Length: 176
Image 1 (tube, rainbow, N blue to C red):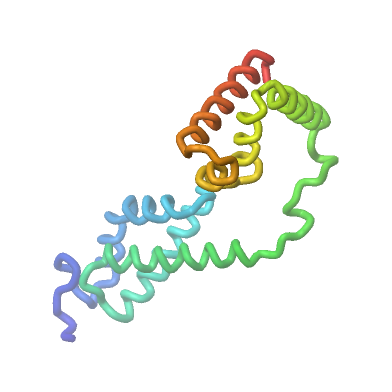
Image 2 (tube, rainbow, N blue to C red):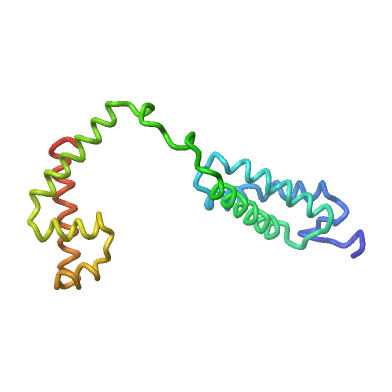
């Protein structure tokens, strides 16, 4: 490669500052890419910074033809590293809230809602209640429920829908 060879929309390989200027124009695209892949949006700017540092460091050593494509590849690598770091963090006691830190009012309100839900479930027709519990609490598929109860899958869907509507209406009426 000659020092004067042109790369990435006219940027010369011996001009790292020109790469930085060109990369600045791509910041919204790179940021959106990272934000679409990270749950905690407070980390997006840190990951963007890491991406820019890695990309500019690498480009200073070896020029690239398409700076945006290369930067998005670097961003993908940074996001993977982020995912791996967060998945491998030990789950210490400081990451789980202690019962003392949860207001007693909230605990009481949740207990009331659960009690109300149990009453509403008892008021449902037995088959509808059974289908709802199998689907929503036990996590069974509609097909498995239909097979286990000797029902048509459409009947299972209707029971689930009607149970959900009945529960929502009753919870709304009770103020929960």
